[in-house]
Length: 199
Image (cartoon, rainbow, N blue to C red; front, top):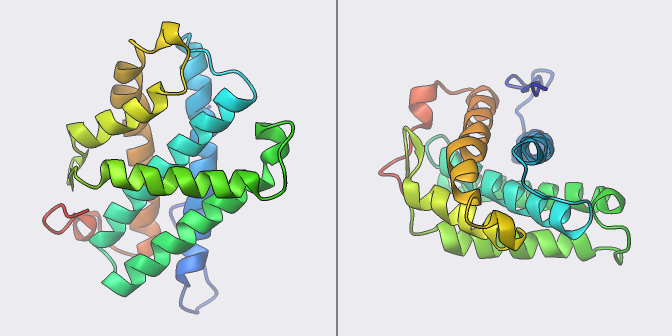
């Protein structure tokens, strides 16, 4: 099932806040993560409801957040980029918390939000040394994402997860996030190219 990507954002003539832009990307990321799980299951990877499902959603959304941050680097001032990425991480954490019942049957209030932010921060450290250019995240960036996903996969799937994540799941997320940000930031695709591919 194709995901409808919101690539235009109407703010009624007023300037859009970074929090509003972040909210759009967070909701897209949630949908992308769920769609990715469907593809993974169709490819015979075991991602059961409960902790495996929760872990995969968190890893996927954290990857999307860091992708969006790299794209924002080419379109926003350093202050705006910081505001956008902070708002995005918080909004994603709220989305995970809002869906806690779907992800984990029993969790204390706020636990899912805190866990996502921990995943986001840890992923940022893992991705920091890798590049992002006009083609998207480099090999190391994509491999780091796959390695993080691999940690929560059952043993039987661990040897095969790299190809699926690096060649299918990562590119699908990159394409959707980038298309959306082109519209939301009101920039041409060329303006969203990274400046020296800095993290």
